Length: 349
Image: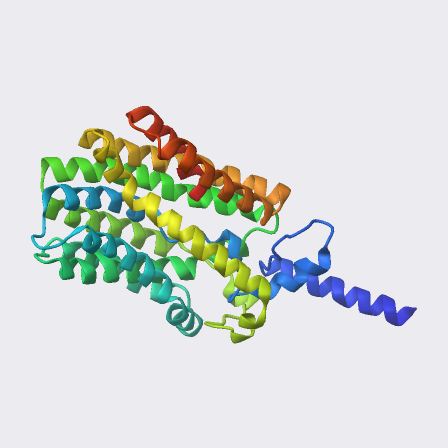
């Protein structure tokens, strides 16, 4: 009996240390503690959770919709078609995620900040270099790949930090933090559209790069992690996860969701123009999309903590799909388009 008590005590202290280290078990069912513990290995960094990692869209991701709309309407790069410009945004998101193993290795070897500072330079450099682009492939490399690499180097080391400082209501904390992306997107979408119209496309990109450099540089300086205290195990790629069905199901859901996410993110401004709305109204649609994100992310975090981090995303994915058919496809005026932007922004955020 005493051996069993001693074993129970050891398990208690082990779980307590994990909680202090920021380890969270994704919740399938509140009564199924064993399932929660088994889901622990889904992450590649012990201090992160897959359901708390929103895509690295940020203010830039939303603002690119404004740039995309300009590229499509004004033939800024002769010979380039809509697929070329769509590939710029896609390559940015792709590069941001593909660098994850490299960034994880660098963060483990040199710490959190050095790769993030590298990302600051790449992000700002990508925008400024894109301002001198004269061909579509220049945009691929600059506003696409280089900006995406910068986003990845900044975003990936940072996603584990917030969970290190919270033991309860982490989804809510992540939602509040992620809401900053929506607020930044509101500002960037309005500023970007105004700069393109009143200054020039080139200077709009340069100013965006300068703002991105200053703000992200300050953010990296203020970043504080607890890696020295908790010493998290950082694995760039865990092949053992490939043998798990729940991991494949999660990846399948993320893959399908991202197809719809990118479509809405980059095509909504041009859709607004295609139904006869003005350029100003199209920019406002992007603004409402960001506003929905800023409002929706904290709420999603709150309800995820309360009702489960699998159930809530599943229901919201279904709701977003229904809204596409019920609101977006029949929309032919500013009002319904804004309504869809608010709803989809709140959900996909």
